[in-house]
Image 1 (cartoon, rainbow, N blue to C red):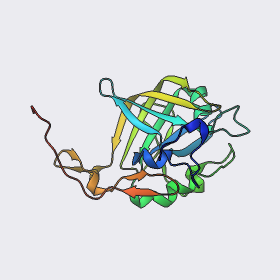
Image 2: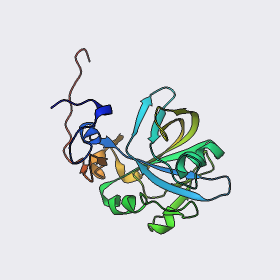
Image 3: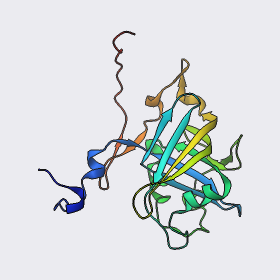
Image 4: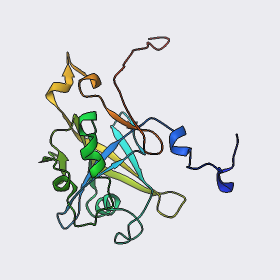
Length: 201
């Protein structure tokens, strides 16, 4: 089949996010200017540069109490920082709990029973037991076409790695099995890993 997005797909559910998959999940921790912590998963997330290391995530919907966006972007506008926690398979239910439409006064760490720890380079909480956390300072927030679409870019200022995820000096994803997002209500877990050598290396 072929369809033009503006004309609609005539399918029971939008296939777009299923086509662009699997996608890594950025479990974004933020803290508002009032000190309220927030934690929410975003599957429009990725690394975008090595030097300096940079990441991005996109928020694509809004809450009535957040002036055209969601808690994460609203907090980042106030403080200029955020932390990206990597989601492992064992934390899937906690991650899912933090995806709910909770009000701005809800601390998702507490609601989902997640142990929090302080970041080292920014004033923000992080998931204490996450396989890794990237502490970030915002470089830009880009308004994308659409009513509530924002891409947030940040420079990584600190990196936490859980000790048991390092094997012979390598950050070994098979030690924790990263969770990724597919389409609809579907997720995937990384268990099979193989290597390829680029031509010329």
